[in-house]
Figure 1 (cartoon, rainbow over the protein chains, first blue to last red):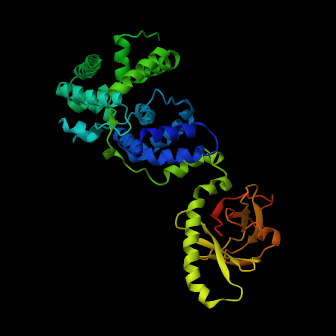
Figure 2 (figure 1 turned 90 degrees about the horizontal axis):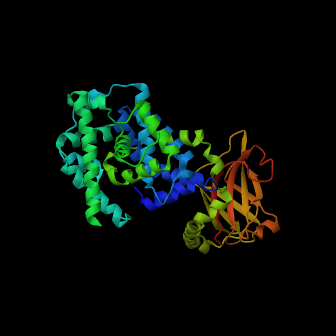
Figure 3 (figure 1 turned 45 degrees about the vertical axis):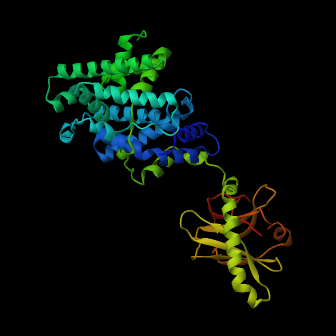
Length: 197
Length: 228
């Protein structure tokens, strides 16, 4: 993976729609497609559907690159959100049942460290490095059930209903886990920010 | 939907980022994102704090066919740098390669002292591991010889066209229309004089008989800088 600064440069060059925009977009694709395809596959679970998600996702990235705000947004997160949203839309419209394929997911905290990269990136600003550390600590401090619900929902794109089926819990219980997990996470991260000032 | 900056907005941002906000509620939220700047700003705030970076372990190479399909459907060829401007990017490499080749040829050829010896002036390389073309100029600078590392023959409906891009810039000048890239051609003196260091040679694919416009119309297969 290239540095965020390089990805930003490629995104802006693609969005400029001038000479060389196609080359920049191709570089961007080479650098980011494996990650975005991985994300799509984790959500939709079927390779051919993930290919559609990747295609639609990069089509949107190309058309929206001119609106990317380099001062306010992280480029990879920005692209990942586009691909995730497309994957979630597609799942909603296809109503595919995917619950069977999650049997192997375990909620040890180690899963958090296998899935996500918590090391500060080389070109992170100091603030970004700190918030990454806070998020990891706050996730670790959640109740296991809340954490598991959040990770499954984010990583696997599970709806409340799928979570309930997968975790064999009533829908209301799962909704509460998600709501409380998110609220506790927000509070914890904001407290870290407050005490750092 | 009017959403004040409050706990309810924060909760919606969280469920949206997580992906558990679905259906009509998700679409309402996305409308608010477009219409209400403070909603977008709040979402961005939480996105920066709550969304972790995926580890590279989840990377999965997409099928090789995915990029060409994307390139076609977005018509990306419209946004490519014109080829004769792109050449300068790897001119340095071509000069170094030429210098190395000259050295190698010099060692072999000089002792024989042929009557009209050829000296390589450029190596034209193509994409990937395609054949390479060596361009050599005779000692009297009248004859240009092209040699391909592998036979390169034009199909019945196409020709190769050899172009010179002068060192001082400007439009490509056609040197020859060729059916094969193993060829010898006699150069008009005016064009031979322009085969100087910094000029470039390129081969494009054109309709049979050569470019109908006098300028390259097809893709460039091989290109390289003149190093001597």
